[in-house]
Length: 391
Image (cartoon, rainbow, N blue to C red; front, top):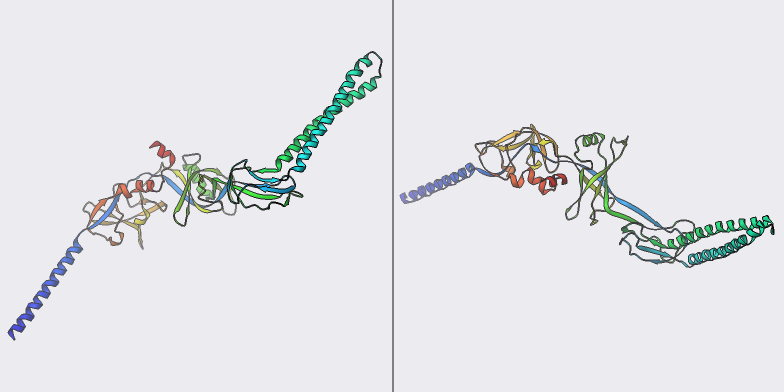
């Protein structure tokens, strides 16, 4: 019996010793400082971009129509292909127009022969009239005939030019370079008989226009703070695989305010040489305003919100977390301006956000070069072209 109690006591002792070790290890884990990444904020000039929704439009859209009548004989392009300016698209039967041109040449030759005869008569009768051997009225008739034939020859030249023009219209060429639509009329059909038949259309994607409508107040802000006559711009659209970005600049602002919306239509010219975005697409238009205004900027994802407002966690000189209540101003999805609550040199925590709490001891790692505002600007190509040239 004594042996049994001794064994039970020993088992109980080992159990409490094991629990004590586990609690001690857990306590050590709880008190071990949390490793966090921090960025050191600084008040400095930051490029300011504003974002609007917009819609793209082709920089040029041309209708291709038949300018003379006839049977459509040939088509030289494939539907949807890229065509160059001056490239042949259609051919209308030419036989009647070639015949008309030959008739115009023949008429001119006939009238030129008549002119030669009239000129010869004038030369023959002029000396006779001077000597009184022929009536002056006859000479004047020949002179009038000569003048009339010279005018007729000018008309013949005009008819030849018109016949050549009509013949040239039978070969229909691309008025611009761009992507062609489908053919609206098949070969073998009569076109241009009662109207200028629409045959196809061509749209030019490069450059591409992006129209957007900032408020009247925003436009006034642009004009006040912009540092370039044609501010840098870029558009973005969510693709199925990636976010597509194309760069450009603002080239147009309307001279009237829409009375219904109090907005002003503006346009950005976008480089779209690879035709990544088509006309009619809804896009985000980003407009560069200035980089001459100082701000403290932080990534938006490090900002917390509760009933007291917005706040971030900073690391003090004792490597302890401190809550910093902040007031935010202008912001985008890349960065947010902090107008109150932070100062240059503050260390803002940007990692392990779900584990942070007031007064928690941490081991900070400065990642300002990798995740600070300059890194964000470079990663997202938010450095305006003028500043890149200066750098």
